[in-house]
Length: 294
Image (cartoon, rainbow, N blue to C red):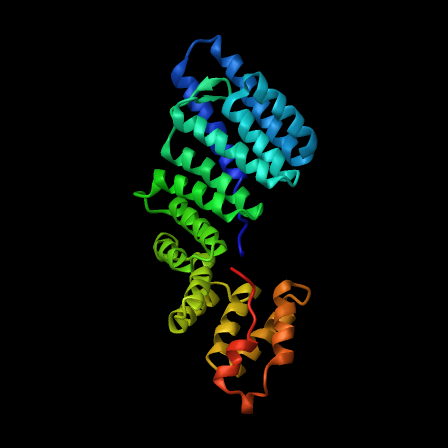
């Protein structure tokens, strides 16, 4: 993956801002302001602790959740669990926070909040990304599908990123046809997303559409000409088409750009196994070119 599968900081800020707005709308009395300010500070401190000392933050957030902390406590618990290396448990915490917000249990930072589709989708998206990290593509697919249900009619970056993430889950389930369908929409929402073009190239390769795959890989390469994963995909497709010279050029570039990477290890193996350019037939190259799973 070219970008992080986990988008946390932006959502934390979104929740904090939404909470402050909701509290102001719900109760404008002078007495409510200190309560809200203290609750927001509690949340921000919890998020900071989740970054700096996640194991301790798990304990604190669990206690806060169990004493009525509501959605912010569950969200902070998810952050702490993820940072502590417990992605599967983090997915559960995020999904619980999302379900609470969806169902109207919207206690947030000490004040009620009107759940917006974007906020609910973001929380389910975090659950999906945590499930991906936990190597649970089936659960990830369910979370991303739930998220997309809230923004499916709203083209733009949030929908595009969720479509990319769900395509990753579908690839993990080996359903490349549905993955491509999601990526067809994603490239429309995010035409400059390297991930979208690269993942669609990989999906098309898996579906046997080498012409379409090479076109997508070239688009990804124009957007990120020095990205090893992009070059590896383009080289794989070139080798499958019998264009060993082009494949070699990309493999050699990968070795120069990122000699210690996984992409470089695959490039080195492919270079060692590739036939000389002069005698390279197209068919054997299909077996020789190796590519990391997408």
